[in-house]
View (cartoon, rainbow, N blue to C red):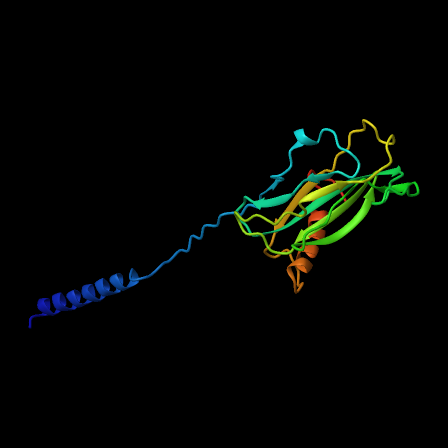
Length: 213
């Protein structure tokens, strides 16, 4: 082999090595995880299907009134839900079931029987009302509806002439908080709901939607 041919062969070998090295440098890999998250939404609706305000513009002592507060989960998250009932109080004289006159005292003007699906968390006087807070005993999933807290209320059997023409109201408010990561370590839903309610109170203090009691 001539000297020039040896040089050509050597140069060709170098070029081949360079070429192989160049290809190998680009045989790499790259991956990207672009994870998208949708923020949840806690939303509820308070309903009283049997309540008709037009039928109860005038009430009589002892009257039973249809009223059935319940909550619908209209959001996308499971939620702990609560109902708050403010019962007006007055210093009045009432009669028992036999018509016997009782002593005058500050007392609640309406009564009701809470259903077994609800747990009372607290009750306390606020101004001229006794405010009750109840938690639902089940986590409410989207599109589900609670059982009514109660189905009827009874107006106190007061002696006539004490509250004539006074306007009375029983405000009911509903609250909800996400079930995930909010219920603490309680064993039952009611215990978890109690812990979540305290967080709700703290989070919404002095804000629109804060709890009354």
